[in-house]
Length: 395
Image 1 (cartoon, rainbow, N blue to C red):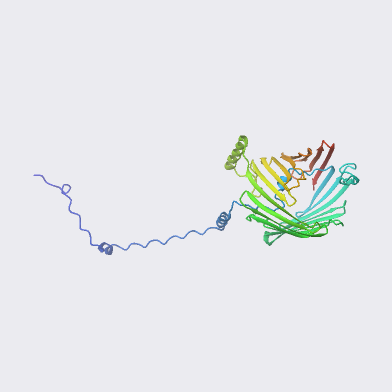
Image 2 (image 1 turned 45 degrees about the vertical axis):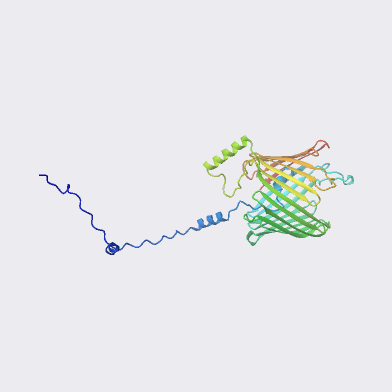
């Protein structure tokens, strides 16, 4: 006979399920769910970073209206001179600097005869004493010119924690050209502001002066503004309107390769310089600036960076827009070349073909090394040639 074991026996039926609610009553009570976890408190540094990111904007402060075309104009309006100059700078304290400026001009050149209607010749010698005192909230500058017997002064002071800047300019020479002008700039010291304004009042030419200007960033690349002024001595109000457009000019294949190389170098290594240094402009960075004055004259300035911190070119075109067109258009070209220890600037007046150049070099490797400058102005058609040299010594 075949005997069955328990392994061979068929399994028995499953036990019946308990009625609803019975298992819950007999089972032990389940533990309560854990309380929801609270988010960790953010550190003050994280709060500052988050606040800065929330307030960040592609718009930047457009700067003051008076300086909107300064970077472009300095490329075509060079400070050429004739004769010899010597400037000695002395640091008296961390906040005070004095400058002794000497000048020697040729006795027979530099100007025409007053009887012929030309400008008077420069004095054969001159001496100017300049004092500058400044701190984090302002600066005071005074200038004593012994040649003309005049005193110039300028005071700048921040107000309301940098919201406004007070400026006072004074020029006294004992003549009708004495000037006293007080100004208030708003918004120029705050990077998050997208607009700046200026109010001015004073005395010029024997009469009062009123003026105001406003400068607004419309887009991250475009800014518009205008200025109005009334000089009582002239009796005619004056107005001006301006725009500035920053853009990236098309790059050549070689320039594009240099940009890509700089980007890869910056991504792989630490950023050059320190946080206080300004960011170098990229190749092709360009600016177009336009000005229109109430007298009917318009001016266009163009500036382009060829090589960052090395080569920059610019131009200026001035032309009348209102009839009668008595003024002929004027075209100026200029360039600036920054080398390791020297800087070369040149400009060309395309109407008169007058060529100006300034070469500045350091006579040493230290930052306070003396600077030697050569200046030349050449007008072949009028046979007018001027040459000058200067030295700047830091004490």
